[in-house]
Structures are given as C-alpha cells and as structure tokens.
Amino acid sequence: MSLDIPEQVRKTVIADGNEAWLDELPGIVDSLAKEWSLTIGRSLEGGHVALVVEVTLDDGTPAVLKIGVPGLDIGPEAMALRLANGEGCARLLGEDLARRALLLERLGAPMYDIVADPATRHTLLCDVAVRLWRPISPDVDLPTGATLAELYAERLPELWEQAGRPCSPATVADALECMNHRRLAHDDRSAVLVHGDVHEMNALQASDGSYKLIDPGGLRAEPACDLGTIVRCNPDLGDDLRTRTEKLAARTDVDATAIWEWGTIHRVFSGVYAYTINFQPFGRLLLAEADRLTA
Image (cartoon, rainbow, N blue to C red; front, side, top):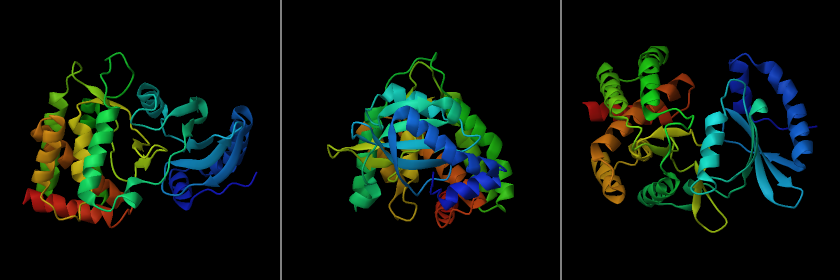
C-alpha cells in the first residue's frame, strides 16, 4: 500500500539507525487495517516519534491509528489511556503493544488553533488536566514522578554539553536542585495519574466542545508535574510566571512551590533537548527565559 510518512518521523527513524523499519511500515499498517477492519486515510503531521494516520472503522466511526517508532515504549501511554477511560484523554479503542500500535478516538483541532488568548488556554489546560487526574495504586506499572526527576537529572548535564552549553551553568544547577526536591517529595500515597506534557498542541477539541489530551506520558506523580508544563508554555508571552504559578495553585489547591519547581524542570530540560534536535525557536525561547529567571 502507498503510505505517506511525515519527514520528521523519517528523520527520527533514520537518525536512530532504524531505516529498515520504514520499509516494513506499510505492511504493518496494512495488517493492522485488516485485523481491525480499518479504512486508511491521510497521515497527520506534527509528531516525530510515531506515525499517526486517520482511519475509519467498519461502522463509519472516525478514529486515529498511531504506530510508535522503534525504541518507543508505548506501554505507559496505553496504560494511561486505559485508566483514563476517555475522561481527560482520547479514548483508547484498541492496542497492539508488540507492534507499538494504538487505535484512538479521533478528535478535532488543537486548542492552540481555536483559543486565541494564551491566558484562557492556560485555564482550559488546567481544567482538562484536573479531569485526567485520579488516584492510582502503587501496584500500577507506571513510572513515578521521582523516576522522571531522577532520569532528567542523569541526562541533563550530558544533553547540555551535547547541545553546546546553550544556557548558563547556574540555570542547569537550578534545574538539578529542583529535580532533587521533586524526587524526594514523591509520595505513592498521594500520587495521581498525570499526563506529563500538558500543552496547547496536545489538547484537542472533542465533539462536545470540550478538550481532551493526547500522547500521555503515563506517570504516577504529584499533580504539580502537569501544572509545571503549563508554566513552561508560551515562553515568549511576557507574563509574570510567578503570577501564572499562583493562579494555577489557587485553581487546583496544589502547592505553588511544587508547581514552580516542576515548571523549572520542564523549562530547562525541554529547552536543552530542543537544542539537541534543532527544534527552534522553542529551545532558544525556553532557555532565554530560564537564564533570565535564574539571574
């Protein structure tokens, strides 16, 4: 079958030395289409770690087929979607973890394209994150906020060097200190299911006019982990991020210090990572803000 593979997905796969998978991909899509009785539509742009195509079920229901690139562990996302059960996140319609494939509810346009005012978007993002959060047992096999903070702390210095030291050493030190604080603060008894990357392009409009999140990382963490990504959003907006943090804290009754520290973590790590994959001007904007705040 003919299959349009977005260029950014091709670049990711080739950079990781998995070019042969690109040749296998049409056959994978074809076999999933037969097993799940799907009609394949157009490929969607925007992502770099998964092929995403519009599909139609045999009963006419519109859906989306997502297939992760080699090396992507899609298990936590599938687990998060199962736990959310369509509330706060796109509904999971089918899964094949061996082929890193998920069949998902098809949603509409991203919040970024619909809501012009960034401050309004921040409020809407906060509300959709709250709908997703739910208590989660320590027995559920998902990484924790402590695990994420520890992983970021291990990777950040190396990525910073790899990216050519794109921000000040003080900014990196500040982020590492925040990572240690949030690692130590993790408590299984109060952890909830969180998304991990709440922003305006990951929130799509549902048929009832509300918004649902896509691409959940799937974490057992404190709610502040999600609110910190909202603090990271729109690095060129020019508003006072302390005020933004306080508003999110008041709206959710979540500790403002925890939100601020997660915001710092997401801002610095995402900014440095963006430099390593040349995702600009996002990386420059994030790190310029991080350096300003550190100074």
